[in-house]
Length: 424
Image 1 (cartoon, helix red, strand yellow):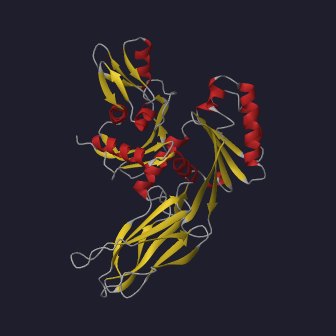
Image 2 (tube, rainbow, N blue to C red; image 1 turned 135 degrees about the horizontal axis):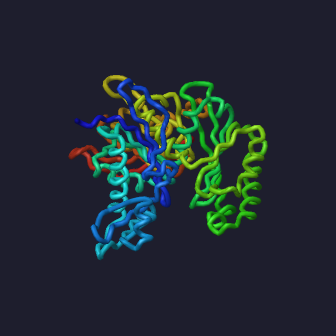
Image 3 (tube, helix red, strand yellow; image 1 turned 60 degrees about the horizontal axis):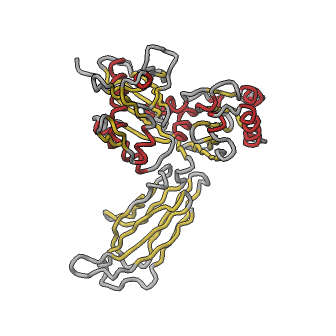
């Protein structure tokens, strides 16, 4: 039988452990809630070591706990921390062959996705969302390339960071869990981090805004790894109380391997006063699965997700095209500032000004920004061609750069350049 594309997958890829959540789209188009997927017969173990091992006798590639067992028996070459090796461009030597980090990670993806396909016979992937701790553009682009080599092009794949996966998770829960703001304490290899979500519901689309506080200089992962329970408990209690002080928080989520064990239970019990507290390890995988489901159903079209790296304004350039005035978009609300911005070419028509429109989705207002070309290029009408490029220095600082590019063989460029900051 031909495989049907029915699998909707959320894949949380971390340096130490990864997790999978899955929804199977049925013929009735009914979409159920995400379910965690185990890679072993033990149905209670959802964490998959992000590691590979090549058996000594058969040279077979294996992953996860099976790879760890092979390592413990000294029956193969074991490689872990695949994500960090991939990000750093590092390689590993396996039986005298240097294997680059992208190929190691490709092997890991191939084995995991192969197991999932076997688990759901006659099914293949409809949508896959991978969530990673950071959203470095170079890392994300390289991940897209790896998945493309596995036959998963960008029409079926999306890569998001943990913050965005958390946002998808929260808004997919019953409304009584996010009547007011929602908090998250994430404690993993990068130490303790705090996130707070706030919601704008007065008009459509609704905004979901994430604010981030880095607490890793005070609560490090070494404190957990070195069993410094008493100091860790007191430190977390102080940071949690300070973060939540006088704030209307409906729900508090705690995630990350650092919260394993009982050291934080007393603090979490106190945080339950007037709030709901949720502790678990599958938040990001399920959030990614909800994101994948929304790509199929369009169920999140009424929300704009604004994490700390996402811009809050639409920016467009006023132009005339096809005999009418148009606003040409250069950046959109929700784009990452690291990759936002476009470049286009325009021809001046008797004006020394360019008009930009900046529309802020939080303030719900629009501002016209005029860029005046001092000492403009003087040529015949409609022979001044300009390149207009928008880039961001950070989330709140947009810079427009305009330069003369000449007009074909008729007029050479005079290398004039204008730059102006747009107020966001």
